Image (cartoon, rainbow, N blue to C red; front, side, top):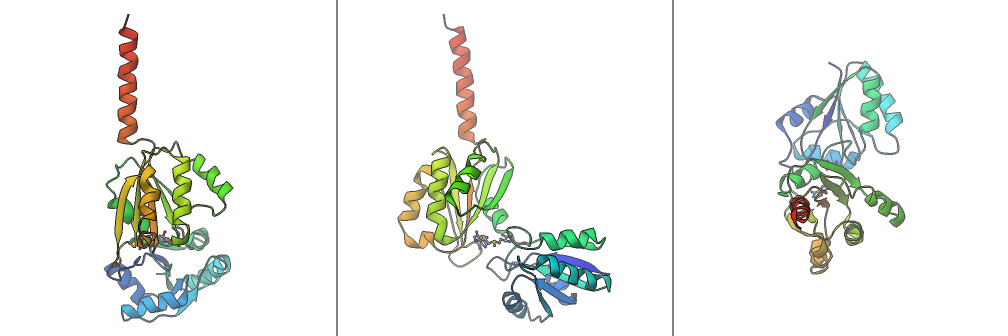
Length: 248
Ligand code: SAM
């Protein structure tokens, strides 16, 4: 039946595609994707070849109309982005919104997502999380946004490009308490995967020590306001205030 399948694709390691995703890519009449060259290359790795429809940030609305017309003819269409889960810091949400609004079926095919992969291997406590994605490039806008995040209790998740990793780390260090834990999850699922966790106060030095630490694709996780440290501090403050009240 006519369906738009939202298909997660690997974020580096071609093995990270689900059997179900491969099945859907096999039966789909067409694949709408961010970059036809990338997705064509990905499909060829699995021995597949499909008509590809370019669906990127700048043409999502008009592509949505074309996809809706095809779905109304009973087609099955897969929607993929360059890497990971569509609509997560990637195009796709507008298409999904329009297809749903047209009363057509949308089915997600879960799979790789860089932020979730980073979180799962970070050891940060499960106090919930807040996905930020890419911060604004302009310093003023970035500072305003970070100031609004300092009280968030869950882990903060950021995406960053290598050329801005130092600047962003410095901005985080300026906005958050130095004892907050930060995790750099670099090149996940790839050959030079690295996951480093330290106090925010030490993050700039760690990055500066070795140029390879500043290369590749990054997820940055920052422990939320409700860390162990904060809880212990709150508890000792509470005990101290009781003691002070009791003291003559
Ligand atoms: N839709 C993708 C997802 O589900 O994670 C995210 C796409 S976004 C345009 C690209 C950003 O995701 C990169 O700049 C980086 O921050 C992060 N990313 C993607 N692949 C990664 C990887 N293998 N390791 C670390 N970060 C990655």
